[in-house]
Image (tube, rainbow, N blue to C red):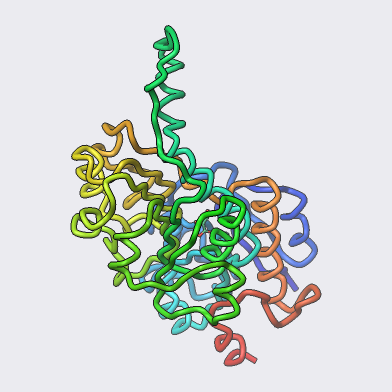
Length: 332
Ligand code: DGY
């Protein structure tokens, strides 16, 4: 009997991909790029499983043309590129990569927050441009992070990992979330629950860790930016579209907030041209989870999910991070 086919939309870690080969015929793309829906269908129409990235959008229109497809493993914790209802309706299992990246993303949130507060990007660009001619005692004055109030909007596991790091900085943490955390977790994270208006008004450094949903689009827009302190920074490591990038560029230009740091953008890899004009914003290309170890762990978890969905490996029949487990129950 021929092996099921798995399509992998981009290159990664050959030794991890090799774990699939005993059970699957593997096709892996040699370069990473965004696929059009037509190209996705061409790749997926004969596939039984796929391992994809956040730029690969799987929706009902694609699924209409992929009758063999049984499982899609997303290599990211956020899965707004998947229409989960359509996948479930089509009987296709889907998984993401939660938890393995929490600490790495939390490290990066702090890196960006610190870089924005202390103007690291601006200063480096200035130095590289050959402008450092002598000392400037009052130059490059940024904001402290230690001892300042860290605000977190969205307090899932990554938000909690960000909060835990604040104790080393002696920084109080306030947070807002759809639902309040258990008292024990609040205590462990040293975090105090506040409403969104208080969060915006009191945070010295605000970090966004919300999942993207249509309801969360532009959760931070012109009104929210106006409600922040003029000395505050804003860091977005969550998803593009949570911030209204145009309103943010305006707020940065008008001094409504001091600085921002963004790893994600609405419509990425395009970046709003007004943001590119601003010096007081740190911009990075969606790399919060990109440490060597964590990207390996994410790839490995995606492979484990595919193996398990087809009855292989230690979790046979129970993909460890399946998002729609009912699909497998229905199939059995
Ligand atoms: C995720 O996993 O959702 C991250 O955004 C990837 O860096």
